[in-house]
Image (cartoon, rainbow, N blue to C red; front, side, top):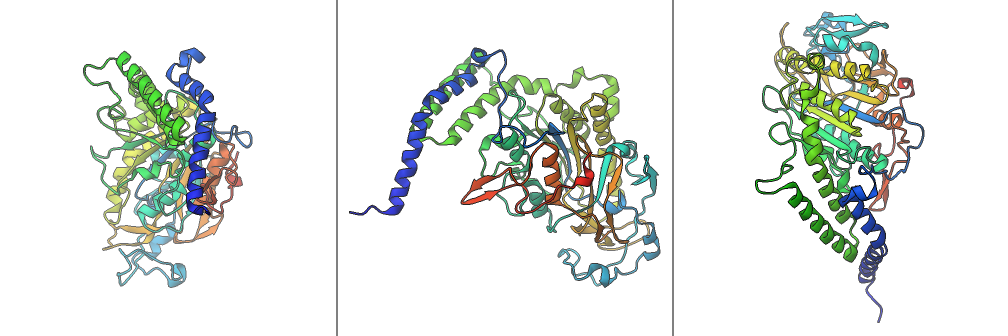
Length: 487
């Protein structure tokens, strides 16, 4: 009798899993022992190599800090100076500029698209005279350390697909995030902290703005050990990290030892690699019981450092606190730290709201660059600042000389990068007179991600993972390194 081919395939899968589970028992037991009793294998737990084994070429950056402005800051009011627009106040955007490009449903019903010149004053800063808005005086002070990229562009026009796109390389959910790719490819440099940490910043005591979903720092189809660990803004940084009343450290250790043995037994039976991920994550949580409280205790920081980050730096959850925490994570060799702050979605009352937002992020962002530089860490730490898309030159809703709103604009917007492998003091790319289209040196988000990987010694075309018959990568099927940004 001929066996059903589907049943035969299922049998082979189970046989392979069982075989590798049995064959790996010796290695698996040694690996488990090194996790449970690291003192038997040296004084300190060992870091973990990634799937690449080593970078593809000599890296400039060891780690990344990504300051993400969720909601899309207006490039017109911060970076992309267009003084000639004053003559276009309340005139319609020419059809030749828009050229039939799609717009969101929030403005598609407007009868007009009136030009809204920025009310912000701009000045030139740095050796090369980069234009920066009055909303960013502290950032202007470190302009010679930044590469300002004015021509970032994306196809996504709404928040969720746009953030998903720049974080994972796809507008559709389910792909690994940038930090997960780096954890997978390069591994961890610190056995006591995750290789990928996420920090959420409060605004006026809350969050607000567009929701951020865990898949934005998820591992997708990679092992769950590569997903970002999100630290909470209030209370224990990680839920259930502290032992409950009546449970001592020794009792916790004994419980984890027994649990690890049960998990290893199950792995030997079925060979599911996620079981080993579970073992590693339990052990990481145990180590974090000591490392995280030490990380978040900033009492050892000098008053000079606290003053550098601003008055909110001592309030857990604030953007200032999280920027300082990001530096402390970098000191402890966390591979990828992402700091989110929301409430940049300014469809109305933009002049007032963007001043408030910049007042929150300007000093801490600049302080992070200064702090890393004075400690000699900017040489091997890459810092990135920006959002998911930009803002339109035309007004959403009513327009006055002092007030306006702006809709989503994916065709061009501004981000900056600083630190390892990046030229400082440059402005890359140029937009048209309306900050609507790119006219010189476009920087697609795949190009941006390819460049980020390049600074870490990663060829973006070679960091792949085969899933469902296809080789996936962060930059999907295209993307070019922006060589003019490289030091």
